[in-house]
Length: 398
Ligand code: GLV
Image 1: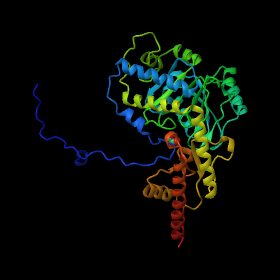
Image 2: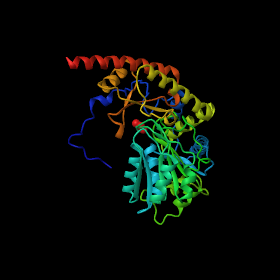
Image 3: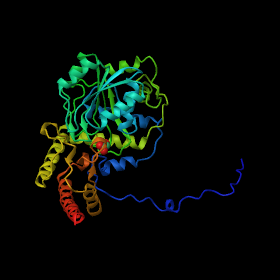
Image 4: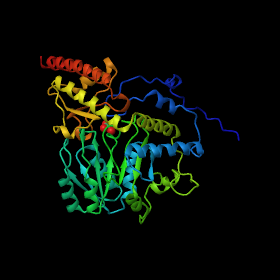
């Protein structure tokens, strides 16, 4: 067929003829982290079709790897084609039917976000709240369960906006006593802090690839136990999203009898990378990975104290080993510190997120980046950056 010649084509911008330019930076914010060579190399392996059995084998490896890092034996254990946010929304759309009541533990960014998702899905969202930097006790949770009688509780293990670690032991048991399912967000904590999905009675959990799994963003491990699976399979109406439909995805991931039906064209290169990220955690050993994050972050906290900086989470027991938040130093412009660190050391120091914007500065030593050399680099950059910010503050007073 002959194409009619356009009178004039819209020309490409001149800059796209130049090769892509990606600077090398040290990602010591709340994620993503830098990706190790083995995982980068995996992402560059030959492209295969999502319908080739070779890819199914890689998907089976991912299932096994996720079972290990989640510490679960759940059959429905897989990865979403999308970031942790995709898994969060998928959990909402599959587990919440219109008008069903969901209780959300909101102490920062992620609870608020899940409330919005539940409301958009037509669910009845009820929040229990704690101030930023604090977490929920079993008493808080039980009181909420009695009052709201929800079918689902959403709670975040690692609140990356504040650096708080939510204890989870006993939460599953409580939920089940009140006929409620437990959904946990472990995006900012998985691989860096202990997690025992089955032992803790967590019914649904998701995470992200880009934090302690050292993998590029774009895939999100997720797992559902039998209770959650039953809720999904007994829905009165199918979920509004086809892309996020867990029943379809379960077939696509090979959990039903063969053959696997086409569902979507999955990001195969991202799956290779995730497979390698999980393999690297397995090679190190989960407990060794938790310990490394604990030790590295403890050293960082010590260094922050020596610089006269205050951790935002006041209860030592409730501090994450992965993302750290500090009180913003008074009278100084944090952006000056961030800019100094980036311009001078090409390293990332972050600001707050959502409710913690303008309240905290944030750091993360995640996955591949959790080592003492990085801690020293960040502390040096921070020390010098604070000096620059102090001088600028002095100047502006004159
Ligand atoms: C994102 O996960 C963030 O905490 O900034």
